[in-house]
Length: 232
Image (cartoon, rainbow, N blue to C red; front, side):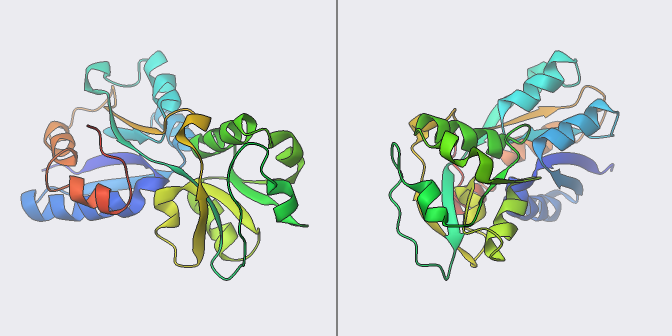
């Protein structure tokens, strides 16, 4: 039985690790997973990395591979959703209500805002979009501390290197060293949608069963418990 090779957005790590363990116990099938930012994973697939399945944290990077005929389009669908959170280190006394023109720059004091790289990483693009919609991006652009992915943002804030950061709600729930200050309005940014597809080069016969398992009554409680939004 060949291992399934999954390239997966790092914000799904805790959930996918749990689901993969359950899948292996149930079927004996091992899933080898590479976690990183969706941009980095898409570029690796473009360069010929031997992935069977790709899960992106947005549709844009899946579109990127689709336009290059690097996924099997009939296997593509949106697997999960998420929310965007403003976080601080758990021991910081910060009270801030998210809304139009809210004083985020002032609340930073002399610090910077940790955010995934908005030039390429989905979480960063969502973050920039919400700050633009709320009218505060211009006051913050020079004070952003871009990181390679959301887990790097989480660590940056948790270690006290930045007073505030923007991550997915699910990431904030994995680290006791941070707290959620507020959730950004879903209307302020494009829908957060995790897109999944089989790569064009995959010949692994085990991929359909694994993808079905991700949508099963066994996997869904794991995603839901960790804060992901399940499709209706």
